[in-house]
Amino acid sequence: MTLPQSALSELLDAIKAGEGLDLVRRGVALVLQELIELELSQTIGAERYERSEERTTHRNGARERVLSTKAGDVNLRIPKVRRGTFFPSLLQPRRRIDQAVWAIVMEAYIQGVSTRKVDDLVQALGIDSGVSKSEVSRICGELDGLVGGFRERRLDHARFPYVFLDATYLKAHHGPSVVSKAVVIATGVTQLGMREVLGLAVGDSEDGAFWTDFLRSLRARGLTGVQLVVSATRTKA
Image 1 (cartoon, rainbow, N blue to C red):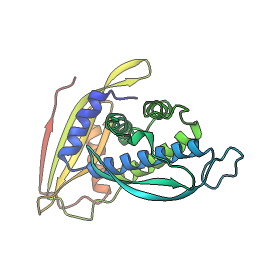
Image 2: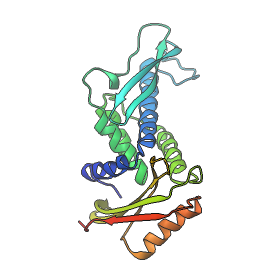
Image 3: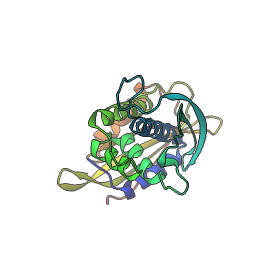
């Protein structure tokens, strides 16, 4: 299943409303850092700690750089080399990277990332040699761990007396067909008024069984003390 960019943007707006951008920011930082390391390896002809006759120089530490994105500032490490200079092409001035990186991170947030999408991103960012399937698997594995940790985290770190439930239908590619998928989001509000995305789920339809399973998963993760639940749904597309 693959969601189009417009659907991802709509879902992102819902996550913004629940102050869930920290996950997206960390995902963006992870993807960018991995692509920087990949480009460096291709530039010097060797992976980290690899012995290679094609090696032209060696790594020599890194310098910190803050990159402003739509998800907020992300901290990156720009590698230094012993001979010559290195600066990632994806960070060149005026290069638009937000849309492509966000699309991948948002796909990962929902269902994981395909090797084709990561390779398309790498090509779009100017790394002409692309990325191997093993590199894609490693990057996606780290993203899966990041997303999985967020979706399965405990919710007993704070009390959420108010919970807002929202749902919408988004178009998704499922094999050769385009189908509607139900997306539900729960946002909690603490006694101090702080909002936090508690959970998100994607299903075939917004029926009673789907909602029941989703709400039970929140309770199993430690959500207690709810005093008021506000629910709003949207019409099916």
